[in-house]
Image 1 (cartoon, one colour):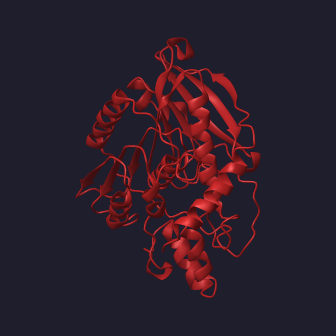
Image 2: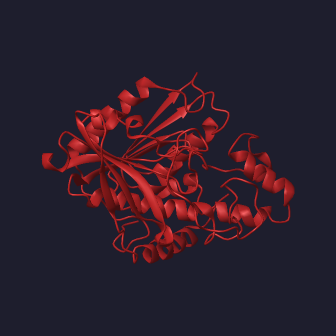
Length: 325
């Protein structure tokens, strides 16, 4: 499914310009943890519509006293919450600040608890879950708010005094990879992206989706509401990250699992192929969806170190004034 360049630009310019009028209203409370080499904060900020979004901010060393550091903004898989601080220590162990961001409404459905509700009510027919919520109108679609939350999370990270605003990266797997890629395209402060097996990429006709969660929700929507499926497809065209990838402007590392039956390899390949900025692609032929992958983590660490060492100036996002096509 494909939306025109003008439609995508107009939609995201309108959406993100309006969202930027709301103050971020960041609130932090230091957390007591057994960590000897990091300081953790329970952080929240105003996301889409001013709704509160929860996150963990983890700073290596003594925290802000150690001066600005590069930062990873971590987005989560479908149904996951931010969990506990101890679940997210890889990047702080490597010397990075990290912001672990809840996905609205998905508190703990995938095994880790979250702390962020989704106050938006049901506006259209939907299948239980999140992928079809509000899908008949781009302005009410669930992922509109989730993408706005992600963009604002990046702004929160870049604005913290312990973070080097020129060295902020997004990272995530599955839905987290989707949000990491969307934020890398839409948020002007992102200097690098780590995109693993992105969800909602290169979405085919809804009736040809895999019968696995969370694509199953879209498949069932097409089955239950065949007359509404074309409208749903038009909405998805504005949020499909393989479409948004065409507007990428920061270095990105893509990773694809060769035996992924949920986010099929060809969808990750499509997002990578459309991405015009400097990029790398790693394929793991025998890996399944979201499988633990130490070689990938090592490659990500090397990739970020290389990108941040160069510290290239950040270009405006495609929807902003001053963007050079």
